[in-house]
Structures are given as structure tokens and as C-alpha cells.
Length: 103
Image (cartoon, rainbow, N blue to C red; front, side, top):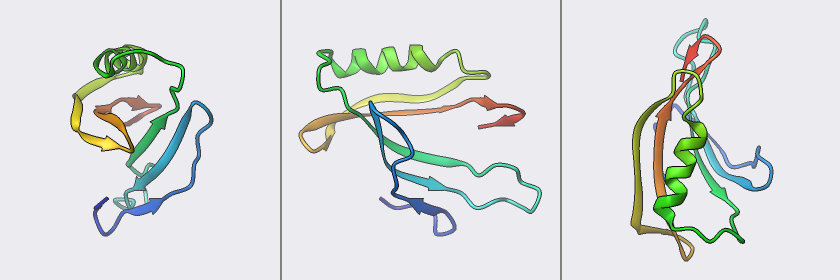
């Protein structure tokens, strides 16, 4: 996966079941006083026993995170042509406020 050259790539898993982190990309700090590094994560939800269509799952996921402070949905879509192994994928892009930082 391509990423800006000044971002770092972390392939360790910092999450616990049912989620697994495949890779996280972290931005460089914008300056010395920047308190937060932006990040992009690729996750897998281990949903072996869940029988639900991908678009329904995406909708439920959005519902579950919509209560985050300052939640702003930027993009959500199923990617029927993009597979991870034999599984379809979806894209979910959003921002929210963490403490005083707008993420």
C-alpha cells in the first residue's frame, strides 16, 4: 500500500479480538508543538459467526461510531471489486474530535 514518504508504517497489531490491525500509517508531526499524528488504519473484523450482508454491516458500523464527538462521515462504500482473501471489503472514512484535537 502506498503512503506519503514522510509517514511511518506500523504493521504490529495494537487491537484485540474481534479486530486485528493489518497496518497503521502515521503522519509526521507538522511542527514541534503538534500534539497529534494523523493516522490511517487497515483493520480486519474477525466476524466468523456473523451472517449479514456487507452493506448492512457497514451501516451498523457507522451507527456505532456516529456518537463520537464531532463525528463527520466523509465516505462510506462497499468495494465489491476489492477483495481481502476471499472477502469483500468496504471503505469508511470519517473524522471526529478526540479531546481538543480534530481528527
